[in-house]
Amino acid sequence: VETEFQRARRPEHKEQRREAILAAARKVATRDGVRSVSLGDIAAEVGVHKSALLRYFETREEIYLRLTDEGWHEWAHALHDSLDDIEGAAPAKLAATIAGTLAERPLFCDLLAHTTLNLERHVSREAVLGFKLSALRAVDDISALLARMLPGLGAAGGRDAIAAITALAASFWQTSHPPRALAELYQNDPRLGHAIVDFLPRLEKLSTAILTGLLEASHVEGV
Amino acid sequence: VETEFQRARRPEHKEQRREAILAAARKVATRDGVRSVSLGDIAAEVGVHKSALLRYFETREEIYLRLTDEGWHEWAHALHDSLDDIEGAAPAKLAATIAGTLAERPLFCDLLAHTTLNLERHVSREAVLGFKLSALRAVDDISALLARMLPGLGAAGGRDAIAAITALAASFWQTSHPPRALAELYQNDPRLGHAIVDFLPRLEKLSTAILTGLLEASHVEGV
Image 1: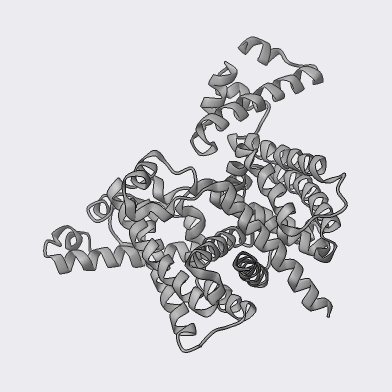
Image 2 (image 1 turned 90 degrees about the vertical axis):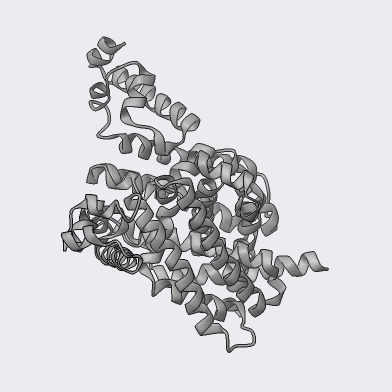
């Protein structure tokens, strides 16, 4: 495999190599959590030495930034699939779709917490600019979709809602997937009972609150 | 200073050393951001070799977990100072107090993003249990205060509100304090204009929405 990797000179072969690396990175991070995956782990999954990966990506973080970008667009696509044929929806119904589609994308939820803290910091200026512009297109697309479903929101309200709900998804995903030592404490120490976070119901409840509250604020401003 | 550190055998001297280390960790993290501070940086600020710190704390992460714990209680104290003499408040007024007191505590906001992702993972089981129990006391205290200000919330609604608002504070603090390369892109590339996050107004707006929406949900459930 290593020699094939090294010989990839034609653009379509290079693209195949990049896809193979991204697929391996997706697989190990879904299994072990983004936090614990090193460049060496991805290389081992592909079956090459890690230096071979560095001809295709700058860093481990660039690989995961690409998967985050892909995650934003793929999520936008899923929201369109669920909502395009509907005229409008109450906040609770819309929140259920948003939270449900996020819960179906655990790798994306995991990546969201790492984006500003780690991934955007270990790549070139060009890579972070490319990521930002591409992710913002997905955010704008989703914001417009939300504003169409809840006309009172407006595009700015839609962006606020998306920023808030994805921040909650990032936080709740991490707290609901604690490291083993903490998971054992949660199970065995009754004093920690209400520290356990059940991801989907809590995200759905708070997404409903955010959409309801933003809508109410826009009514008040509109008066 | 090093020899004094090494000689601290009496409990009150040990406690003084611990306080000196925490003060140094607070200072360098406030100046440079939690992310970039190493144990060596803290030791240099104290004026000792880093091995001397390890007689007082397990890891760099235990030091910052202590400061996070302190941050929760200190913030609870500030909320009591602002709210104890008031009978009740509308969601917007309460949200302004919550967001304002968080904005006045940039180190706490920075630490919030690091807690589950890093700090809870590099300490002993005893240290993370102690942290969790202490931080939960502060969360319960703040939740009860919010439920007193907005009786419709209930204690569970108060905990949801605190979990959500601090998750937003964690996320918005990081996005509003980008690394230098990204900050320059934000300033120079008009396509990134609306990616800039103004911490306090956005946190206040979304905290208002969360409190309003949770209150509305409890009315609906109550009917």
